[in-house]
Length: 258
Image (cartoon, rainbow, N blue to C red; front, side, top):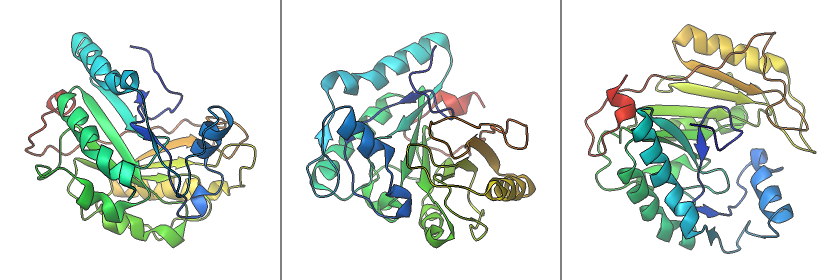
């Protein structure tokens, strides 16, 4: 099955809606805002309405799920690159339950949900979340030490995988407590206004993860284009986590096969 995304740590990207509000320095050069504004002519950031995506787009996960089952190969889905699933916005709050109903029906897909609002995760989860759904990984974005408290919120939520997206890397992250974290993705900022990085930030995080048994994924260096400078000290370091196995109402072949 071919990829439908250029994001190296997933197989597909699915956006149930588009639009968001900036909440921290990592949002300053938001690629999602730029893409929806410049390529689609849409202004969806801040207090503006969000735009729920098309019926055809909502059908994609079930098609991917059928393909994954037919091939006997579970696949990963990043949900979502153009919005924040846990944003407190009327359209987001109204649409979020549909997202989890879609996830429930797609047990051959592992949904990687990344948020800058981990304090809102618990309120936004379905009632039968329990110890965590087997086909959902929960993550939060942390750009520097000022925002490490996001991981503290994340680690209060039961999940088969908890991950941190250290992207865009805007400073050291040596104050991040890795207890309860299974995976760290590192990425320098990309785009025409990308901010510089110190490659020592990536080296330090790689070494800390190695010492603690946490999977580390070096996505890219800071660059005008995404997925550039993927090597770290001349080596590709792209590890994936091993999920915990919890009893869950949403069984996943992805966990059954591990």
